[in-house]
Length: 285
Ligand code: C2E
Ligand code: MG
Ligand code: MG
Ligand code: MG
Image (tube, rainbow, N blue to C red; front, top):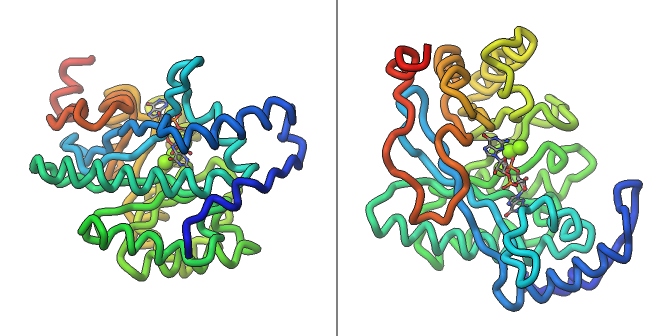
């Protein structure tokens, strides 16, 4: 596996969502330069333990510091990167940079795990698991301190290569997280036999959980499912103390969301517990 950028030259405009080819071509050309000129930056969002609110890990979230358009969120350029194959070198860049950042915070005494989002396209590249293991060995990071977040699309059964890669990565001790669980194609059978260490409940179910009985039923059953599979469960998009409190009461292990911190460069992450849930209730009601 050479980690080459060859795949970047394959440009596919397919499917109804492809949109405006000319605009996409421009984004792709610019993005290729962005990778070469080091215009991408990583922000990190804390993932905290419940009920204590102590930081357990940071998730790397890529942004593009565009010379004209300012700081662009991933929604502005990842779709073009996915369609062009540029997502492959982009993810490699993210992994490299994030592991380097992690060694910096480890050196300052923070024992935070690192979560990195990985595209199904990466998982299909032969040798990707070995590439990740080599990177970890280079920086001297133990395998269990890296968590790779994959979405359900990477788990659908016709993507054998991706599923094999996940199995290999998991077997090596790297954490495997199912991101945005419940938001897309929920095939529970796909989870069977895979080394899943974490399930992240999509924020659409989390947002209303303090008041909406249906969201509550869904979140409760995902927690039960995750625990039954021997995985931790993390709620995404926690914005209020009420939601945090409810999640802690029903046994959700970890949480992430604006309540605990927005994505920021890692030196700005507050290491202090944000929400001791018992005190919050008294204050907010
Ligand atoms: P994700 O992995 O599900 O990340 C969570 C997204 O929700 C992030 O958006 C985060 O800023 C946002 N978020 C976190 N807490 C809250 C909250 O309390 N309320 C609300 N409304 N939003 C919250 P962001 O950074 O724009 O990233 C969007 C998506 O882009 C990510 O979703 C992930 O799928 C993808 N992405 C980001 N970085 C990378 C990357 O390096 N590689 C790949 N392949 N995908 C990435
Ligand atoms: Mg994620
Ligand atoms: Mg997510
Ligand atoms: Mg999400």
